[in-house]
Amino acid sequence: MRSTPISHEGASSEILSHLPSPFPSLLPSPPSPSSPPASFARSTPMAASALESAWEGLAGSFTEFQLATVVTFLLHESVFFLSGLPSLLFERFGLFAKYKIQKKSNTPSYQNRCVLRLILYHVCVNLPVMVFSYPAFKFMGLRSSLPLPHWTVIVSQVLFYFVLEDFIFYWGHRALHTKWLYKHVHSIHHEYATPFGLTSEYAHPAEILFLGFATIVGPALTGPHLFTLWLWMVLRVLETVEAHSGYHFPWSPSNFLPLYGGSDFHDYHHRVLYTKSGNYASTFVYMDWLFGTDKDYRKAKAIEEKDGKHL
Image 1 (cartoon, helix red, strand yellow):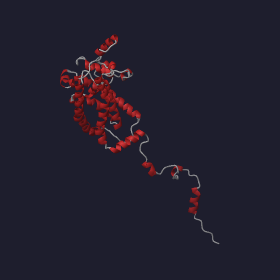
Image 2: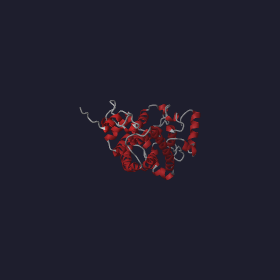
Image 3: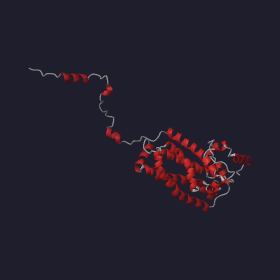
Image 4: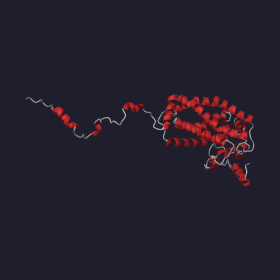
């Protein structure tokens, strides 16, 4: 009986297949029953977190241009009017009177005038600026794709924006209180000597562009993710609305944040003669302290605290 010849090559392969490989990483491993196939992995959502999943859905519904312009505008309008209307209603209906900084109040018709002009300014000035500035932001690195930036990046950038904006705003605002610029530009904002939240953005179109530069220069320098830009915009709007609210509550941020000016600090700026107002910074108090433009305010506060009442 003849035996079947054995192939040395086949035998060698069979023997080697049972030996441990000195390079296990080079051998393909069989698919694990618990691991999903590659096609399934690619079909799962890109984001693991709920926030990134929501952002993925939003980015999939709009183009980046639409997100950076129209959606940004709508977000601004929503936050601005929803946060600004309460102080208008408090003043109109005499609510929380003991927390009102000034005892004077604006008439309903004067309030309505402010609201109507704000809508006009926002549609005719703010929206076009957002549209035409998009290419510049894109050039500076603005993006809307996943992944979202790490929270440390977001926080550090927003803090940088606040500090830089406050510095630029201080000098720009101080310049607006020179005689010619105040008469022809900044006096529009000071038409409301008794401010309420919505008066924060009531200004001459030239001032909107001039001081708006302070708000966008930080993001323009860093080229942030659109999510960071939105967060910065929301926080800046809430801050300026609170500063113009005309009310100082026990829970007001200035009671807890040492360097924050808030409503009491900025209200003084509105209720005195423009040449002596001081308190030019937008958010913090240290710029006015460094350059001595808060001296009259400090004196007024000392008298107020001694008498136990608002001026």
